[in-house]
Image 1 (cartoon, rainbow, N blue to C red):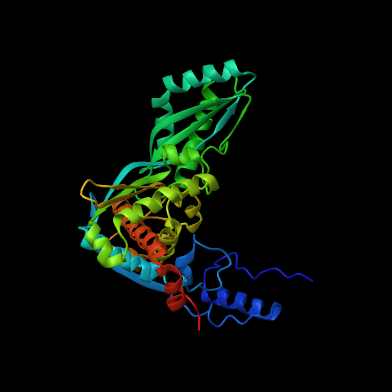
Image 2 (cartoon, rainbow, N blue to C red; image 1 turned 135 degrees about the vertical axis):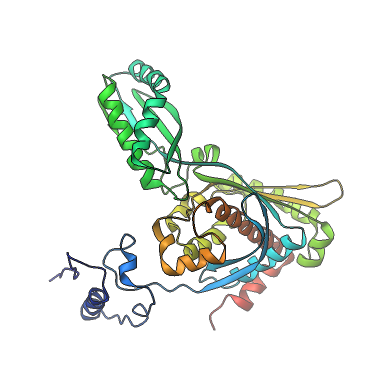
Length: 388
């Protein structure tokens, strides 16, 4: 007969309750939780991050760097903590970081910043929905005022509108300070929608999300209009340096990029690059980001060009990098340590973190592209990526 997982309704975040649940697992399964039970985190510190706490998942962590970043918020050399169980990953990113550093560093720019909630309003017909859209435009100031009663750091920037049938989809775009902001904008949009319903007649019903915010899933809308931080990292690498460090020419890399663009198009890929999800995920785990946001954050547009002198220009645009330096898992002890390594703990550091991640991803892109062409891809995995 099934048994309920032990819980304490008064205070469930204690070592006593964690131990009870581990004993429950040992009694009801064939598992021993010796490693899961080995941690330095105070169970009380996990309140708001987990339920039914039993321990921690320990992921190996390595260090990449020095990574030179020429950003508007991150400037200088950084050592980047990355948590992964994939052998060769840290070595590859380190190789790319060296190439970027020797090329003068990666120039990184945050060009947009917005988090969305996208309610949909339903009417009797399309004309009513169209007229409602005009009213929304005329009353934006009042809507923004209502939304911002729920948050000190969130600001309603604009509202995009999309029409279909007798519905009007509204995409509320907020800036969210140091937080990723999904919950923040959900609450703010709900209050705004309730005010709209109270002040505009004829609405049959509405849903707080009509799925055009595409939370935890990729969309072309995010690629075009951004979700989270839109980050562009770029570098110009001398051809001679590519030959020396990667044993590959700029011309060969450029030609390969053209071939890969066709392959990505034929596959219907959301990413024209090599593997941005690898670097993003590893940094996300280390710094306490919501790892499910890799679904949006892994989308990327890679562009390459040959300069007149034969040097190699490479850039990656990450249109939906969802990161935070406040809230969620960023406050956990080990994740705080990783943010401190990057100098990204405290207020006003979220764009700095975004720029560092952008440069990290660029390092991984050029390293893997080069390895595939130079024949190092398989041999490096054989040497470093197998448990022996």
